[in-house]
Image (cartoon, rainbow, N blue to C red):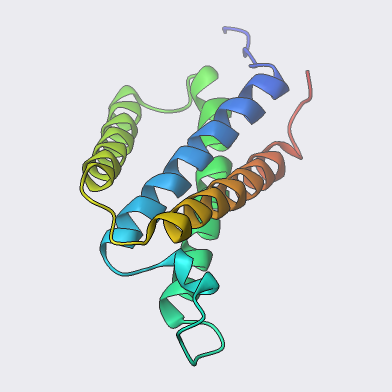
Length: 147
């Protein structure tokens, strides 16, 4: 029986956090195309406390960042020990590439957001995605063997 190989914990944590951030940014760009405007938080012309689209975008980016980090860390731990079939790995790679390609296509079109609001929304999505992806990856690796 072959010995189980482990990736160093920091490598898995870093890779999972990067993957979670990329997925969160992709969801932010795709959401902005469909009216889920995170930049609505900084608008003063609305009479609502917080626009519904901004709240949905905030929670969507946070949940995708967390789950992206969590599932990437879990999959990396399983893949290195050979517990994931080759077809499943290929399917997950294709899904990730298609999501990032869709976000790239959405980002190449003119922005529906004003420039300053779009920059602030992008930075907020980046920070939120990074924090949540790190938390998701750390949560996934919390019970594992540390190297």
